[in-house]
Structures are given as structure tokens and as C-alpha cells.
Amino acid sequence: MLAILLLAYIFNFIDRQIIGILAVPIKAELKLSDTELSLMGGLAFALFYSGIAIPVAWLADRKSRVNIIAFSVALWSLFTAVCGLAQNFWHLFLARMGVGIGEAGGVAPSYALISDFFPKERRARALAIFSLGIPIGSALGVFFGGWIATNLDWRSAFIIVGLAGLPAALLVKIGIKEPVRGGFDTADGRASEGAPPFPVVAATLARTPSFWLLSFGAASGSILGYGLIFWLPSFFSRSFDLELIEVSWFYGSIVLVGGIAGTWLGGWIGDRTAADNPRGYALIPAICFLIAAPVFAAGLFAPSLPIAWIFFAIGQMLALAWLGPVIAAVQHIVPPNMRATASASFLFINNLIGIGFGIFFLGFMSDAMTAAHGDDALRYSILYGLGFYLLSSLLYFLAAGRLNRDWYRGTA
Image (cartoon, rainbow, N blue to C red; front, top):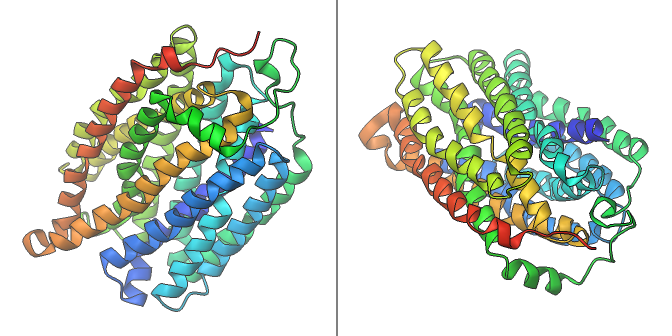
């Protein structure tokens, strides 16, 4: 089950992040500004991805999560292929909206499904393994996107990687059996109570301070997380004079090595340190983001490519260590019959702000500072944006003080 969901999540992030490496040839052919690129890469995806995820997750708390995930994988894969047919900004904008609609049904139901396959003391690691789809998928999107665009064109890259995701949808449908809902969280292993109406879930989250602190902490970090994955390929091209295929290997290896290390270690440390003290689930990302900001800053001004690679890889590791602990914490502060909806609400905040604002912010700032900094405008845009990592760290430190009180302890 975990391997199949990981495969689907890898395609999720290949299709989501391939736009970053392809931004260079897309900008040249369609004659787009950095602001237009940011709207197409961020807001077009984030609006529908974040908004539709909550009603889809509400449905997943009641119906087959497996069927919802399988349909979603097929839908986002087809829309990714459609991106390759775009002839102008608006064609691509609408196609990216379609990718967002498809991906809205994939992640939150997967979180809830995984939580019903693993006991609570192993969930952070299980969710961290699932979250490996982020660095692996992002890296493969950079690798294959750059390689296909160099040897064919950017349109072929969208079509090929999009259609390649369709078999994963079939595998989800035939390879996963729906587990007992909340079986590890009840004393007798039986299914938890039926899912409550959405207003009840909303009221539960409204009176859970740690949910809001974790959500806005993740959103602040994701402003840079999504912003960097979209804009760093352009930064390496402009500031280090790398060709597209060189960027794909250089940055793809950073995402792969640093991302896998950080995602796995975050989940492993979370289960080790927070089993008896839930505060650890928030303290891990708080410390990591506090260190990540100066590390990335050093990478931006590194005197050579090898030194830049080291700083960016370490920064990537620190920036993704939050995934396992924070996602596990969100599963643990609500009853099992609310998990998909709570996860979607968390993702709504995280992704609407992170994807929608983060990519736009860095692109807008780059355009605004071009007159002063020329080709280095993107470098300074990213530098100023690192303040969001510090804000994220503060919010996670505050969340750590609330988790013990907000923890769902299960039924007797």
C-alpha cells in the first residue's frame, strides 16, 4: 500500500514541479514575464488545488478513499499532458488549473489511508516515507523535464510525463484494499464512528490552536519551499550561466539527495523523540527552519558551484524535515473520522499561501528589482524571502507549547 501511494505521489510532484525546469524554454517561446510565469506556475494551480481539496476530503471521510485517489491520479496526469498543447499564457494557465483540480483529491485521502494502516508510534515514519514523493518526484521532474526539453521540446516533456502517470492510477485502484477506518485508534480495533458534518469538523479545528499554528507554520515554510523549487532552476541558469540540461542535473541532484535525507530523518526523529512528548513534532521543524535560512543564504552567494551544491543540499534537507512530524501531528489532534477533512484544511492553508503566494512573491520581487540588480534580481528576491523560514520557525515553537493539550488520546 505504502509503495503504491508513494509511486502515485512521485507522479504528483513530477507533474506539479516540472513547470519549474520548463519555465526557461516556456518563457522564451511564449514571451512571458517572471510575474506571468509565477501566476501560471503558482496561482493557477493553488486556487483549485486548495479549494477543491476540502470537499473532496469530506467525501473521502465517507466513501472509498482508494477510488478517489485513483481517479485523481488519472485526472492530473491527463491535464499535465494537456499542458503540452498550450499555445499561449491562458492555455497554459487553464491547463495548470486542471492539474490542480486533479491533485486536490490525492494527498489528504492518502494521509488518512496511511494513518489507518499504521499504529500511532510508526505514523511519522510511514508518512515520511510517503512524503519522499516530494523530493523524488521534484527531482525526477527536474531531471526528465530538462532532458526531454533539451532533446525534444518542452511540449513533449509535459505530454510524456503526463501520460506516464496513468498506469499509477490503475495500480492504486487494483492494488490497495480499503482498511478499517480508525482501527488503530479504538480499544477493540473496530471502525471509528461515522464522519461528522463539516461544521462539526470546522468547530473542532477552530478550538484547536495547535492546528492553526502548525498550518501557518507550514504555509510560511512552503512560501519558500514552493518558491525555490519553481525559481531555483531559473536562478542557476541566470546567475551561474548553466544550460538547461546542466541545471536539470545540478538542481535535480540537490533536491534528490537533500530532500530524501531530510524527509526520512525528520520522520525517524519524530517517532523517536515525540512518542512520549508530542511537542517534539513541532520542535523538529522549528529548529530546522531556523538553521535553513542562513544556510540557503550562504548558497546564494557561494563562490563556486561545488560549494553552492553543498549549501543548497543541506538547506534542502533542513527545509523538508518538517513533513513527517507535522503531518503526523495533524493526524493526531483530531479523531480518526475527521482526518481526511482536517488534512485537507491543513493543506488548504499550506498550499494556497505556499504555492499561490510563494511562487508569485519571488517572481514579482524579481521583476521589481531587475532595474537595480539586473540578472541578480532573482538572487536578492530569494534572499529577502528567506525571512519566511524564520517566521515559520517562530510559529512551530509556539505550536510546540500547545500540542500536549490538543492531542487526541483515542477512545477507551
